[in-house]
Amino acid sequence: NAGVMQNPRHLVRRRGQEARLRCSPMKGHSHVYWYRQLPEEGLKFMVYLQKENIIDESGMPKERFSAEFPKEGPSILRIQQVVRGDSAAYFCASSMTGGETQYFGPGTRLLVL
Amino acid sequence: AQTVTQSQPEMSVQEAETVTLSCTYDTSESDYYLFWYKQPPSRQMILVIRQEAYKQQNATENRFSVNFQKAAKSFSLKISDSQLGDAAMYFCAYRIFTGANSKLTFGKGITLSVRP
Image 1: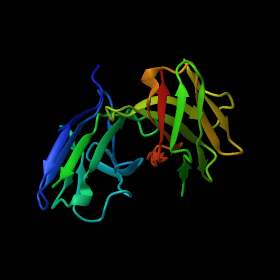
Image 2: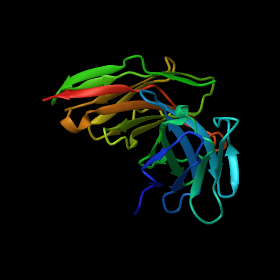
Image 3: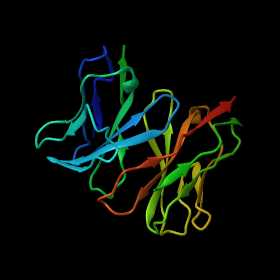
């Protein structure tokens, strides 16, 4: 019974490049959440998606960041034209419904040089 | 807006002893969930325990239990018989009860060290 999968686990990008982070939810889960953790900080909510729908994107930066959860395949968090301040751990969580407990993936550590 | 406060940045406990980690929160909602997550050096986020605000009984999971004081908006985690594997960052988190607004709000975390 696989848990939440995230890949890559580590990603290095140079300033101005694009970063694509992938998240496969637990089997049977159709709700996905993305969080960002800056060094020495707690996790901050970014976006909540269901299949083909963005439910809540109140935590997403207005520019350069986008997220999708297509009918088939993993959820993708996309960061265009990365800057050093985007260096962080990005966690994905999934739940069976919007009201259920969220289970987290291992995170993707993004380093922007 | 909901906020979660963990005022102690670090704590230390002797192996086999008991330690309590503090958390307070602020909300105008009456129905919500509270959680404690553990983040070991691997950085994986692991759910430790969950409390529904409408339940008066404090949640327990083996060596982990909470002291939930709804009126005081306090939610502390007690770890009994501490083990070396309990060393980690612990995050308190809050979520509103309804499904549409499901985001977790986290505190800044507390680093727990366990002395052998």
